[in-house]
Image (cartoon, rainbow, N blue to C red):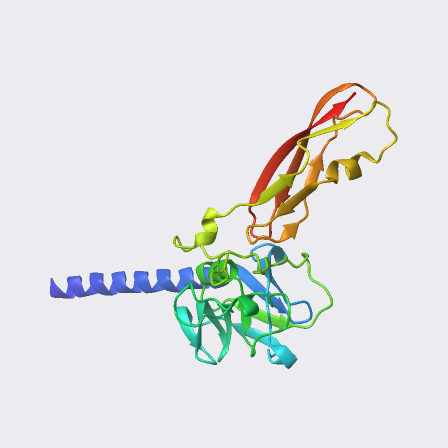
Length: 272
């Protein structure tokens, strides 16, 4: 009887071991990460098909003065917070090789309310001491989704499969410059902020048949701002408008900031 119990125990241990090994292997083969030093852009490729498929782009900061080494690596250690050179800290840290890490822009302490805003505003340029800096949202995505052993290629290429995302700037109008706006932390005060669209004239009037460039006219007096107070692009939907048929028409405006926050607003065009 003891012999049978021992055999059963060994079978269970073996089964768990095989499951853990295959699960880890499957995880590391789900994605490949390419860091392009020339563009300061990270591309995540989805694996499993005939060819790696570009899946996600992230704006980053690689090392200044070519401090980030080119080559192929595999990820290893992960840390929720990790001390960095210069007595500062990073969030959602994934080791690429040795001291070369994926991590958030750095903080004075291991506290998400102590972000260095000036360094955050360098995302998209070469600014680190060799690590690959990311927004909190992007460093967390790698931390959560890319298992130990995920391949990382660090390259110098002219372009990327996706356009490099634009990072939001923490400028003079930013209310909370010591917080990363992309941080999902429930205490992040940026979560209460929204995109704004200001419309100087809620009702615009024109004469029927007026010789005007309609979209330029509809843009006059309209501005959009991201959650940090930076002016951003906005779109206009006026496809159903006619400048020759009298009546009132709804003009729709929409804007989306670099964090994905979206807002729509409307005005009225009177054709008299």
